[in-house]
Image (tube, rainbow, N blue to C red; front, side):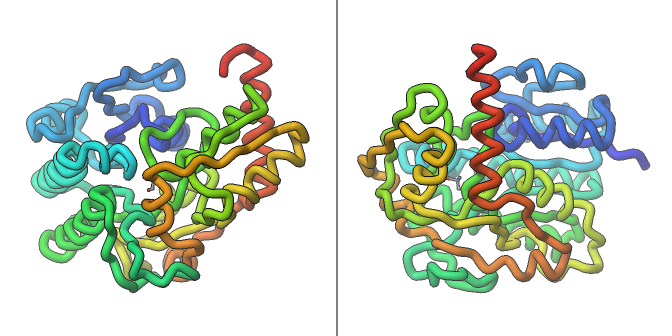
Length: 320
Ligand code: SER
């Protein structure tokens, strides 16, 4: 059976780049870009796209039937900061949306489903250094609550119905193509755009705030590698710890200054500081390494160099 893929959240930070990579691997016509409020931009015009409201089962089902979808990458989510401002919306999109996706995947005997989790599943009682795979999951954000429940729900569908659902606990994802929407780790992306455009940035967490992070090429690689791993090698399914690097906001600014010496970063923490403080500093991702061979390519210096090269080129072309 040939693969037909639906990416929900295809215009989002991760979805926009994941869809491009999936189309390279499986063919443009085999990957449907599911969007909701914002229409797909130029990079996604080379294949099918459909309006998908994940909170409405029928809306997902219509697209699944139209294209005979066999695999879903369910990238839609309300992130941590917006989730604190709109907890009802976060619950509805993150929980009811996921429930609809899992039900439809089960009913249509789908081959595989990917659902991202996040470092937001951890909370203040979790060990913050080298956070283990199996540990205390008592988040304080609505986003984190939905991600813990989501992991449990995905694993339930695997055990109870044999649906092959897989997921990663993404750290903060740094990307050059699409801005993240409403997360706590967004400063680690915004800082690059502001450094290139204005040589100044006011960061919304303190200088010494350390969080685990990953560059987008590694995020895409991890996602596709997990989805292509043989099921028999997996002991975990929807909750893999995964990381690439950890640094403080100050260390990131310092690394950028190596390329842009007159870059100035100031720190004015807001409500997102509390969220950041409740998350791990470093992550133990040995299960991902052992079960499906995870290994990142980018560290802080190589990610920073690559981000700045890409953004500076776009800035010079007047496209930033
Ligand atoms: N990047 C996300 C956020 O900050 C974490 O999963 O909400």
